[in-house]
Image (cartoon, rainbow, N blue to C red; front, side, top):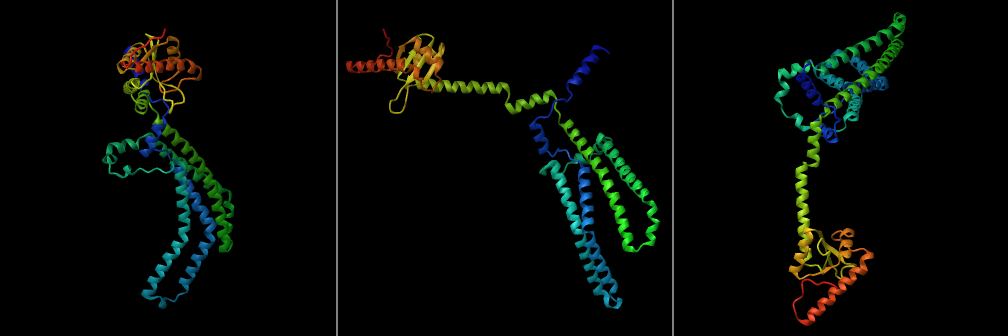
Length: 375
């Protein structure tokens, strides 16, 4: 094998869908109506429910049908007439409907429960829309020779073989009793036949139930296989759900810039800016009526610290150099948070100094100095 063929094989292998489907992939498939369901489970449920209904309700149904038949046979032919025949037909339809309705109702209920138990409630109105692709001969031909078609054919063969084998071996075991039925009365012979039918039914039901469980597991495996994702699909879905990294970075930068502008606008309302004096700058504000402790309204390092000092000087906010306090405030307190208890004393001294300076400047009648330095 050449190097080019090796590269081609590796490329095909990389495109295989080997990743487990995500929750979003499963929900999207369910929204489109792509769910796994075994028709064999539904068929077995309907069959068992219908036969049990006949077994439980059979005596009552037989009595009703027998009574109606005797009533029809007891009527004289002259008394029936055209009108009587129509009434008799209507009565016959009513009798058969009353006899069949409980059996059909239980079978329908069993089929509904079997379907809901497998897939739950799935509402897909878009599947009712006309789609010309469904009548495409090429698609239909491909579906005829697909893996699903082969499996359906195998299941049908196994089902016929199972039911036929169970019926043959059951009847073969009681074959010697069949000639004796001719010597019994109708009621007893019917009871014997019903017993044989019941034996055939429950044995065949066990075989069909085993086939239905196999089909359920196979449908589940095939559904999971269809939902598997390639690495590229997984990456694209992560981008869609969590956002593209570039877009997320752009949003974070915009949020950071907005927060910085909001923080810098708060510097003008600060009472004091404590500096390093070059590297750090922390702006504090304290309102004795509304605040339990002074609050850090802005802080920065390097160029941002210079920007905070410039805004403070322009707004007439007092700038106090205090390197230990500036570093402690910068590292210990987030913007918008009150200062910790261990810094109360140091901050109180700075604020007291600022208030004394403002009173002194106000008493002298001169404009407030933008910057003051402690000796």
